[in-house]
Image (cartoon, rainbow, N blue to C red; front, top):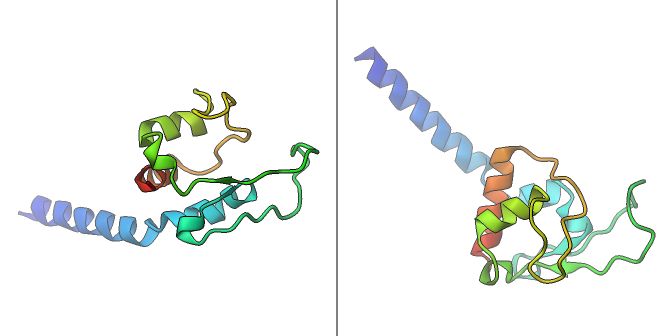
Length: 116
């Protein structure tokens, strides 16, 4: 009986944690994805900020991801963030290594794939 109670508590805690950590737009901004991308449909503007030491010198043209889910699925987005595949549009790999956790990457990919 105690085992079932513990499993139920773990399941409830996991769901609660997911809901609290589940705001993918906040993950997008917290990981500075808005330095190179915007999502106008979600009200996220391009925010280049100060250049990093490994940034290109060229002027950045923001990529609006408002409809990215119409072109690719979450699995492709994850592979792109992992630098395993090239962009479906310009045949380039993602410029930066993804710095978030695997859970954040999955949540972000699922959210981006839902944007159509």
